[in-house]
Amino acid sequence: MQIDIEATNLELTAPLRAFVEEKFGKLDKFLKSYDASGVRIRVEVARSTRHHRRGDVYRAEGNLYIPGGMLRAEHSAEDIRVAINKAKNKLEREIKKQKRSH
Image (cartoon, rainbow, N blue to C red; front, side, top):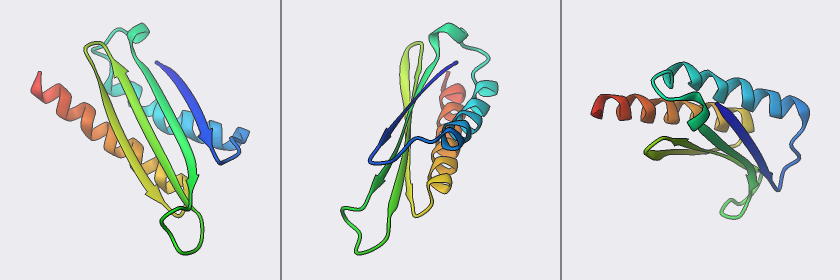
């Protein structure tokens, strides 16, 4: 599985990149039924403060491209790691839901 990471209004440091790769890399075990070369995930981590009165709000979004479709999950939180974890968990649930429907 290929993982593409993009950062918006946020510096993508080596530890943050490693954290994203570790968390979203765990989804690989749920994707064994797909050809690995056809599976790609695009992760965007961003700092967004537009609709909030104070403090930073971070957003993590994962778009999983699988043969025959795309699954998407997004989460916002005051901690970037929490947002990444929650987005990964939502994407995991989407994968399981997709498998049950096929």
